Length: 385
Image (cartoon, rainbow, N blue to C red; front, side, top):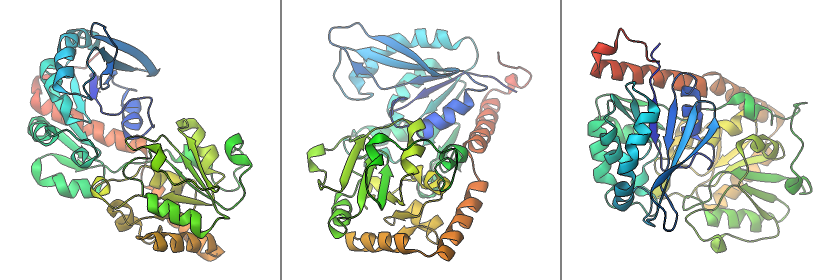
């Protein structure tokens, strides 16, 4: 077994919503020291420096603090970060390291680290997100040309990218079924219901995740108005949009961000799980991690017909494209009889039996190691410390 360090560059912070990067890298950290490099954070008048934290065993988060207010991995920020890289490289040790990218914008930093191999885990089409910098597409083309192996976060992205790299593999987001299984109906070991949800009447329809430009505000408004007796619960941070534009009704409850550990307790109190995504450029290629997490809780799921939900799970997830159709889909989910519910639960269990984050991380690790050894065949006989 080759134990090489991994330096990951991400547009998402480790302590933000716990999703694909954290799931994969925390598992890879069982065999590889992981150095997770976040986007810079402004600190007035400071000398550029690293702010370190260790959120999980063998994972060190490197957050650059700089006097620049430029966003993300802007060229100003890259210039401030370049002198910090020798410190990062020294901390990673003398071993041959792998650079792992979630954002192409950090590619100039990777080149200075002289990695033995480069991985591009393309989890989203970032160029279609609100505020995407114009250089992102050019930087991504360079990263794809530089990468030794490329992964995509869902089938839609795979179809869009598969002709651009000779070693690209589709790895849809997976699930920690045991974690979210704590929310299954009738589970004796479920967590106590959160105080901010416990007093809400039923039925409850819930969503957790980031609330941003991908969120369909018209659908939420239609749900609240069509059924004032339904309680709509939204757990997650509001980013990139003004919270003032969110629909406000007595039966809509925005509870803010909660930790990954807390999510099953909220989920256990919902009668229907929602995927109210807008159908726009930002959602064209998304593959929501929460789809399988909802399945692990064995709750009915209602979604707008985004491709990576509708195509693989159209026989299981209730779909509604327009606000009226979405309301009707929620009505159908709540009104399903025991036979239909049992059929859906059986299908959910079969889907979950075929995937796990452990298996996904293991398969990606194998491809990463093979890519490293193809580039550096002299390392076949070495075991990295």
